Image (cartoon, rainbow, N blue to C red; front, side):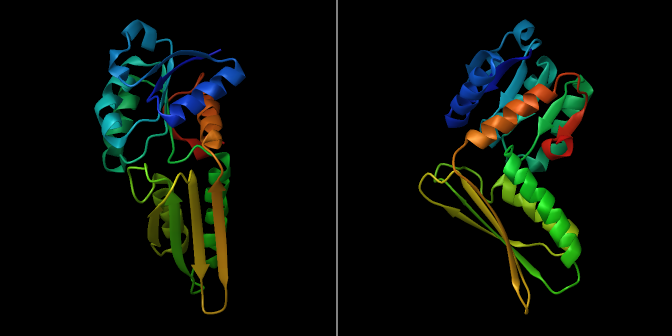
Amino acid sequence: MIKVIISGYGKMGHMIEKELRDKGIELVDASENIQATPADVARECVCIDFTTPQAFRENYPFIAKHFKAAVIGTTGWNDIASQVFNAFEQAGTPMIYTSNFSLGVNALYAATKKVTALLKGEGYTPEIEEVHHIHKLDAPSGTAKSLAQIVEDGLGLAPEIRSIREGEVPGIHTLTLRSGCDQLTLRHEAFSREGFAKGAVAAALITEGLSGVHEFGDLL
């Protein structure tokens, strides 16, 4: 059975801790300073990272160099993606990343690929609205950006993204495809962070025997 160290011990970190406990997986540490982890301890553990974009930018070289594997749920680093991927590949450290570990969101991604391929060239205009809690640091969300890329790849049009920050909303993503004849809406609403934690722990289990860098949806 794998061992885990959580990088970032906020609300998501606590939720992941509960999921690990429920599954009987050993949590070695939950840290706000992952670079303080002794190298010999890190080598035996999978790092599950849910921090901030800035913290991840500072920490990813250490995680890649020292940990057995990594599951990255932090978003907001697309501009340095090639550097991050290279660091993990050169270190030989397996990495699984995604903008959203929810299985429901990954089903939304899959449905969007099918729908946009079908509607390409039929006069549909895409729009995305994403709603999150007021504490979320990035806007648009990483999930909205991933969804937008899928839409652009399939439909040939880049959707406008509207970001709303209110209350304690875990996450709502709505894709609308509108034509002169009709409108199609695909919507995912998270009721809590539990779905994200379940997906992240599932990803950590997949790292056993894995090599390379992978987007979570490609492994499902």
